[in-house]
Image 1 (cartoon, rainbow, N blue to C red):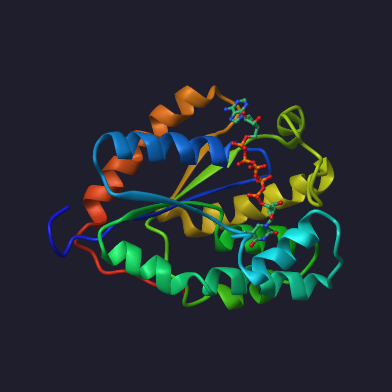
Image 2 (image 1 turned 120 degrees about the horizontal axis):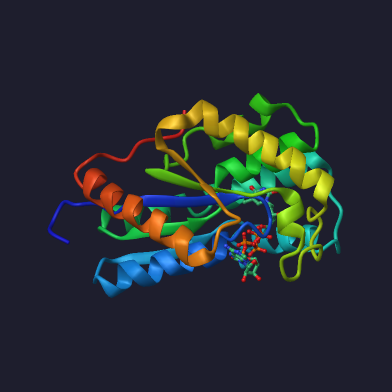
Length: 211
Ligand code: T5A
């Protein structure tokens, strides 16, 4: 990549088991094969001290009030923001499995106020694109290992999906919704063509913040 061009911040969002990890990996491999500088990331990032608390919570070995775990998920993003900014400005594209929208969707689905949930996300780097993988909760429960973590319950995932839908219609311009129940290869082909156009489009644009 030539001097001054930045990388793109691309996010995958969706309910548990919607295929985010699969699609992130396929996109990463494609871009790498084209010699585009690209790195994977995911939130929660479970290795930091905050991330370890989040992991204990998700695997049901620790309980925390809803507000506290919400703020920890957000803090986990904030603790990585300098690294995210630096990598993007170095020209590296980041393919990120979950971001602020998961933070809002899962906490609002528990009954916390939507605006309260969104407030700590303000100021984080705004994604250039969000790929929202949407499928019915009934479809997703049939996928491998469904049900192992705290939030993997059909009724709860239905509420999470409603919040994702609300955010998708509100944020419209940089959200791209896909039918996650189609074969992974077909989904990848659709995602790839949009992603490559986005990389070109944002290379000379300044980074923006969530507001
Ligand atoms: N959370 C997260 C919050 O509450 N607040 C926050 O701020 C954040 C960031 C952990 C949990 O944390 C919550 C949300 C989550 O509940 P996670 O570690 O990302 O988040 O957990 P999951 O979403 O459960 O991630 P998974 O890796 O388990 O699911 P993926 O990545 O969506 O799905 P993937 O690709 O691993 O695929 C799951 C299975 O389906 C198959 C795969 O082979 C695999 O077996 N599959 C398909 N099958 C059929 N058709 C397709 N198109 C398929 N694509 C994949």
